[in-house]
Image: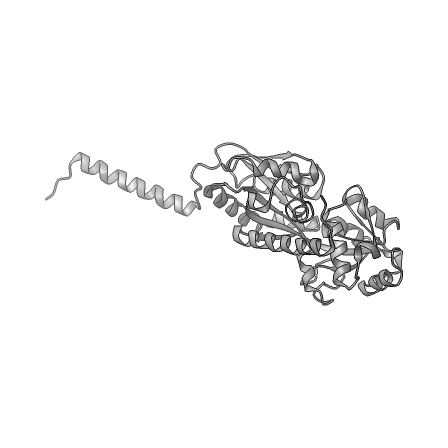
Length: 336
């Protein structure tokens, strides 16, 4: 009979405990080293109450039980999203200062403006969680019932049709030009008149009061006006129909190239962002985008919840930027 020594028994017990802890850790889900050890600042490069702010705050609330430390919302405005974006581009890659990245600051502005303090290469995108399809709308009383009627009006009465936006170089500005160009308006910068307004609310109001003939805007900013009958949707720049918006898609109208016209919100860090932070945010976004409460909240806001991981997000954003840059160079829209 073999008699175990006290040391041998201790070693055996320790091995069992370690094994049980290891198995428990595996069953509990992914472990992201020591991240986060303190609160994470999520920089929103736009003001409070806007679509990016509302979206990012909804995301942070949804992640309350998922993330070990608080996600602190910080609104850092200026330069159409450039100030907050530049802050994150130039921060340390430890994952404690992240960006609520948005179409305007990461795609449109980079395509249209030559003096931006950052480039796409300065960021590491960890994912996209929200899409806002572009919807072209007019006032319900305008008498315009389709995209073909709108385009006929532009061609037959040049310099009389107007389209609004939240400002020069905004997504709505570029969207209006891209749509007119795709539908055969030879010189959209001259044949239709751009009316830059003070923000997205101002752009919608301009259509509602008849100042502007149409606007191509994020679905989240016009869904309420469509639902209450104040606006008539003419087209959604998507492949598939959008729930709650009775309008043909860009693909149905023969212009699938316009599917690049979509607003989005994602999360990014500086290009030096550590792998543990990328892995953590990837898992957090994957989890929250499948959470019914978050999906319901975002859907009621007029958004489409999606999950794009780092590789898919990078590919999507770069393809959109390339398309936007192409139309800007073709029509000479660059802002210096």
